[in-house]
Amino acid sequence: MYLLEKLFMYARNLTFMPRHERAGGVFDFARLSSPPASVGFDFSNARHVHLGDQLFYEPVIRAFRDRGVSVVVAPIPAARDYFREAGYDVVPPAEVLRQELRISSIWMYGYMPRDERRERFLYLNAIHHDITGPVAEFLAEHALRAACLDPALRPIDGRPYLVQPGPTPLDDEPGQWMVFNDTVSSGWFRVAPGDRRAVARAAEEMRREGFRIVRAGTEAERGARPALVGVEDLDLRGRTSVMELFRLLRSPKVAGTVSFDHVVAHMGMACGKPATIRLRRMSRPHAEFMKRYLIPPFAAGRDTPVRFI
Image (tube, rainbow, N blue to C red; front, top):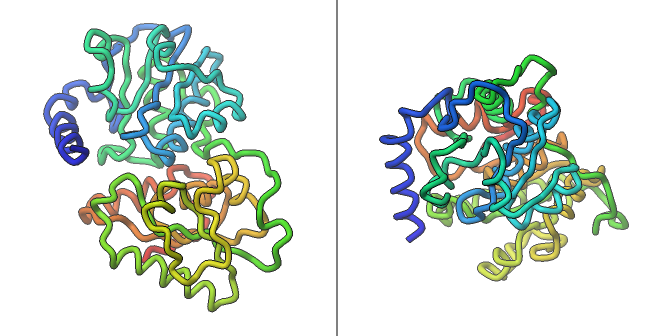
């Protein structure tokens, strides 16, 4: 069912959406002639808008707030505390529909009320190949233009909000650590057992170099693959919230990440941590797009080392 949904979405994105494309990855159904007094952001569908996506979109939301626009945000449940700490008004999706301009992910188009989905909406696609710059900054710039706001009014920082440092399970542990994750939830059908083994081998290499390995992940990931892979010094799967994972990656005890191209790597790079990444299986053009503009999705700090395996 999930694969059929994705195929239908891709077909719509290729056929219907292009006539509304304002810039790469920005699809404009609002066609505003003056700036909106309020903007609602709906990224609440956890089936199609994942944790990494929330990090790409937070700078877009901040760019509107920085220009004095009233904003409300409906994120996925796992990201609500993140947006609250960042100072946003976190609301149910229905509240987003009451705003003068509504902004959402292109993958949520079909989930919007039929009589609303083409009214006062911008839809964003963070993996659109017409994007020609770091994704978060490119989307923020062109969403602002669509809203009749000046992107040059102040610099756009595409780095996501960083959770404030706090206690972590590593505080009393010796050594330097690598955060390791060998599973994916989105795009799971593009990951073969050999890909997971490659990530585990990279973690083992880090261990031989003297790093200790902490395995991070959700309770669902632990339930699907409860067995250890033999490289873990500490298994925190199912024991860290999004906020706790962010604090873990902010810790000076953490030297980097080893994972697929998902939230662990994106959070780590936002915190300035080197990343070892296994890309999910994809076309060569898409892999090049990912490496050029999405890993990481911001310009500042792009000198953080990234190794693809």
